Length: 310
Image (cartoon, rainbow, N blue to C red; front, side, top):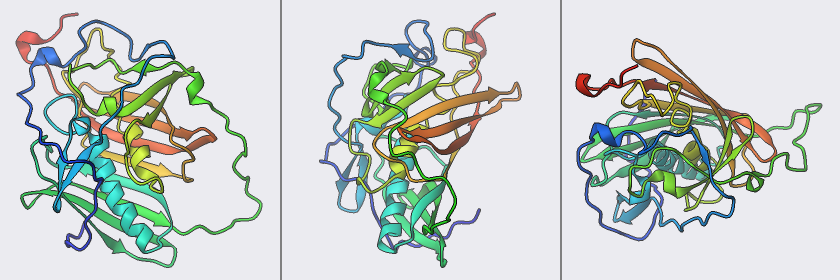
């Protein structure tokens, strides 16, 4: 995939400005929870959910990461990065009346850190009568750090096909609140989201902070989809075999626009001894399935002296 790069459209999620410092280097003992547990541990439904403060602050043309955009280590979370790209793409697509978002492919090229000043811009890559492509980019000091290609299509009516059920099929609020197992002891992207676990391995996720304008569908989908690997590691959290498993990209395909704030994620991961893997997930809203997500993962080994024994 080849992206053009012209600085003609800039957009991002604007919050109140807050100055934050960077993170220390990652230590192996910080990679896992302080206790053995399941991939998702149920908590009482009445658990109080803390208010969230936003993902990025606007300072002129720059976007400054706030703590809720951080990942579990020393870089920003892919869900926050992907959402920033998607907001830029959807804003441009809305101005050009390009239709419904149906696909996104995001590449995480180099780490984005908490003290970086981000420049975000988007451009029309390929206009069409029905199908339209938009590219979005994030740069730091002139260097490209992340990019995405987004596909939009104008709706047409196809008689004879089934319509969406009028009544919701799922009620995420009926399921217990959960916490992902990885608790690094500081505010990060996990805390920007509300989590609930349903029977059958589906996790329901919605933003506790503004992920983008209400009309934008992709940021809330990407916020959930980027967890496909993180909540389905095949080696388990109690006896981990890989020190970390970052995803280098994220692909999302939608067959309809999501309804409401909640996104359901039903993930599955596969890992190989050669050090690569993949994760995939079915995506849903309260009315049913909306699409799917896939991502490649790169497995990082433990240092020899700290590797767990069988």
